[in-house]
Image (cartoon, rainbow over the protein chains, first blue to last red):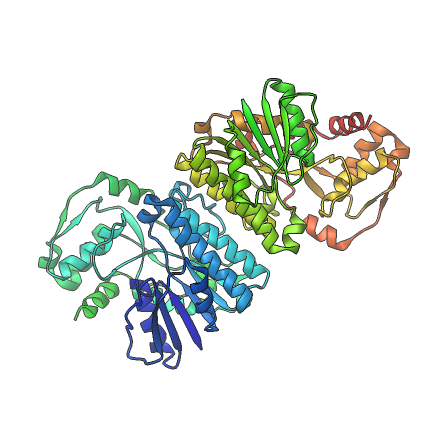
Length: 315
Length: 315
């Protein structure tokens, strides 16, 4: 089995590559990113390449490797797509469409797993429990718009049998390792990651605001599963909300105290930022993921297991 | 006021141009189509030009005319987009995106009215009364997919203030003048148009299947109105289902008999075509257009008035 992962230098891409080799030690992986990403495994069958997927010839060379499955994880994050419309369209839409077209022409029927986002929803979803089939996506960001356009294209190409696509909408990943990002959701991981590293961290939102989260452990399990769901189980609609869970910052800090102690928890200071709070309040806090469960995706392991995993990963 | 209409050689484009000059005799109209369309008015301020909008330089020359509003009506119909994916994407998506981008760069803030379609819905809408905000669009055609992608892009560009867009979803236009088309809905106009011309016509579906229709009279009134709705009334979502009405073939034939007589009605023969019936049954038959009414769009004039209009137009 040969699997290509784009955006493989990112946090999710690296974790997915590790998981893949764990469950399929004989898999051949091609990890692609703008700059050649590190190999997070000890497998010699993992190849790491630099690939600018906005270039047609680079996409063609990638698909010439004749993959059995392609994970499309690359993209410009939400704030970047808002700051630069053309860059966002070029990377989040055109380069992905270009990949789908290259697959359609060079290796039709290939499995494609595309990571979309709950940012496809707008404020209408906030008041309700959001599902794929009951809440109309009305994105209020260029990022969400671009992800949604790809979802529909992938669905159409799959309906026509050109590819075998699966679009999975991701919750906020918690705990994300590495440096803070410019994302409004960055604090969610920050209030655990920084204290665990002995550093102070600021909580910019009310303790009682719920946020829709997914653990890296559950996410990579489900991303691998996404490839293995029989196509016919999707019916005529290839989009699925991945399982996650709602937690408030208060609950996260309670779990942190339980797992890492009072002193670690005390490193988090409340410092309200109205801009961030407004953005966070514009995200739906509750989702119904029964469709994912029908398709065999696993439930999340929840806060404590996730914080323990994170602490273990730092050692 | 200078207004550009693309796809202006089509039935709707020609009717819209006539309506425009009727309500705004001093308007300067540019009617564009692949081949220069006829001028359906007596106004000397109507210019008719051939323009292949898949070419960037043609789009630029068009927007260099500095329009106050652009009606984007051009497109490959449903069956054509299904038969040729690349042609459909090129015309229904890329050329429209290109126009929006040209407007964004050369004349930001211009009003744009884009004709979308109820084909953005899939079978999920059939069981329910469809609205813009309650029924998730899950198109089951490349045509519907391409229209939907443009809707979301137009919405995002409008949110960002690059254009002032309005996407209107059209019902099936009844009675359409001219020759039968390859569209599955072609028979709906055919069972009135052909008998009125003294010719036989076939009804391929059950008399009791309801179809969502709009009259040319109401459609062009509402297309003109689409430009005049204050932007803020749309809120954060620029898509609206245009008003229409549901009629069965049985009701259409009754109205035809009432308006044009028994002999004319007798020219329609039932000849069931299971393929066409299956497609028609996949379309939602009922819509709730209260959003359109809140935005000031007019209700349809209904069957008899529409058939009388059609007969008058043939004289």
